[in-house]
Image (tube, rainbow, N blue to C red):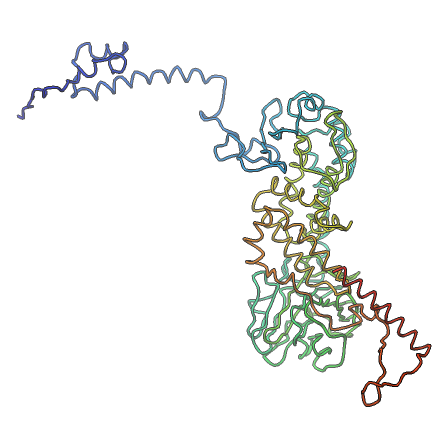
Amino acid sequence: MSHAVVAPAPKGYLGAAEILGKSKSNSYESGKSAVRGITKKHLTFQNLQEHLDRLLAEENGSEDSQDQLTEGRLGPSTVVLDHTSGFEGLLLVDDDLLRRGGGDVAPDGSELVLLVLFPEDLHLLQCQLRGEGHLQEEGQKELGEDGLGLLQDQRQLEYLRQSFLKCSCVCLFPRKHLTFQNLQEHLDRLLAEENGSEDSQDQLTEGRLGPSTVVLDHTSGFEGLLLVDDDLLRVIGHSNFGSIRATMCVYKGKWIYEVLISSQGLMQIGWCTLNCRFNQEEGVGDTPDSYAYDGNRVRKWNVTTTNYGKSWAAGDIVSCLIDLEEGTIAFCLNGISLGTAFDNITRGAGMAYFPAISLSFKESVAFNFGSRPLRYPVEGYRPLQDPPVADLVKARKLLGFLKNVIHIGIDVTEGKLVEKDASTWQLQGEPTVLITLAHIFNYFSPLMCKVYLVEDVLMTFLLSILERGGAVEAHPLIQQLLDLMWLLMEEYEVHECLKQLLMSLLRAYRFSPIIPDLGLQIHYLRLTIAVLKHEKSRKYLLSNVLFDVLRSVVFFYIKSPLRVEEAGLQELIPTTWWPNRFTKEGKESKEVKEESAEERLRRRAYERGCQRLKKCIEGL
């Protein structure tokens, strides 16, 4: 049997009972529970653990009484905002699920705060700007009684009607007032109307075979060594004469696709069948049932070759058309028809034609089968890839709603609606406007991640703002719209949208025809400058797009026109004139002769042309 050795405490040390009972203010013994715990047993270090367990166990009983207090409520013990299903509209909730994350700042420097309120209707999003100068107390009283500046009752109904019912049928809500509570339902109904077009769109695919998204067939439909871009639309020749076809073929109807010429060397562009076999010497147009246009040698090819078309240059766009009803193939250069190249092409059972190209070493092109709007559409011909019709209609309709909001102003002093000049619109703190825009961008933002919609809807709208002329700084609406995008769109959505916008501007700049005043190139450059003047957009683009994805140096390059008449120089200077006379040997003649009437007319026409050219250059 072991014995416990009890040693006296060293001098100056206190026992457990002395320590625990020394002061009632900080001891374990203070309180009735502590006194009861040591009534029959001395408190020592040996039983201290047991004593603490007993003390703490006594408090657990309070949880039972606490549970009785939860009667009348349902939910977890930790209460946060329901970010999974208990919300409506577009909300930004912080990681702690209790507040809006900071960091977004209004144009005037004041911080933007989004609040979720839970009155009778849990779906109401309230927005307010915390700062000076936006929501005066008098303005709040005029605008409504909720203290947050929302237009109430009849004025709110009128505002929403002007914003959303201008572009839709008023009878959608014949018995129900349009409010923020039912605005999402209203938008769902408006946008759902366009879904019916998708069914009819599917019926129009007759006459072609292949996936809905058309790209270059980099798995089996090629010959030679080629470098294909990540999007499977751009190709660079890396062997003597490589060939590649698309993943889609057509056997009925009238079809078109475009090729963006990035280099002006040896290439043969056109159509081929699945039975065509190519090698390093023979490509598209060199075999039966393959047809091609060669702008480098200005010829057409189908086993044999003859003169056809015009010479192409880097920056040109070739349109390839096939009519399987008439059995013809034609080509266009920068939207100008080159005439029918081939007729009586082979048709019938088992015959289907693929877009195809053969190109020599280091030559490069980019295809547009319909993933972006065609630059030069031809009436009656369909792109190989269908445009996103349903999304396109939705995006245009939502843009119409956005334009309505921009044109409607709220007079905070009188609480009424007024017509505003869109060019002077600013992102301010009217909660009614911000809530309305949040509803619109809830649907608009995901659509702006698609290249077709960015180019067809957003870029077209932004370019229209600059059509009034003047300096870029004279159009602050673009800066305001970019502020709005960064505020109401997810970060990844803004990034993708800006990336696609800059890529579309680059393509439009590079592949626009040359005219003397370079008006088209200047138009796209002005929008590029306007976007880059927005600080947050500029920082993202410089860090992630302009040097990593795009070669921004292309914006400083202008192609040289190979054809003088297409550059417009022949129209500016229709005649030539020499100030000096020369002999047959090419030496300057010193003999002075009187100027004839014909020479005078030529000289005057030449001088007028030089003046017109000088004005065009000064504009640059």
